[in-house]
Image 1 (cartoon, rainbow, N blue to C red):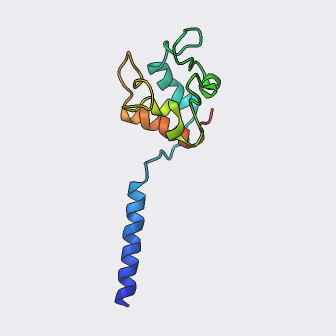
Image 2: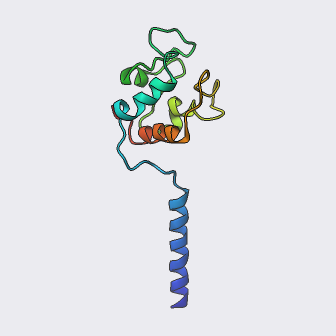
Length: 125
């Protein structure tokens, strides 16, 4: 009986460890138009407007252009923030180039998490 209780305790601790190690994802369903567009507008434009040339070839004027991507591949891979350049480029030490936004203040942790969670939820319009 004592061994059974010890086994259950170990399983309970393991479950708790897994739960606390998982990245926090927003419970709220996020959308581009409601949650992401204001962040993009605040930090990424005018540099990434379609009418302005930029070395990345990336335009972020609207959802369709965000999903189209630029010279460095997919800006957003729905369900996969760690494969999405939109998310990776706002982190310190991105896989290529410099952290965005280059000429402005950096995104807050909450804004960064919102972009992560939106992509993780499937990057809905």
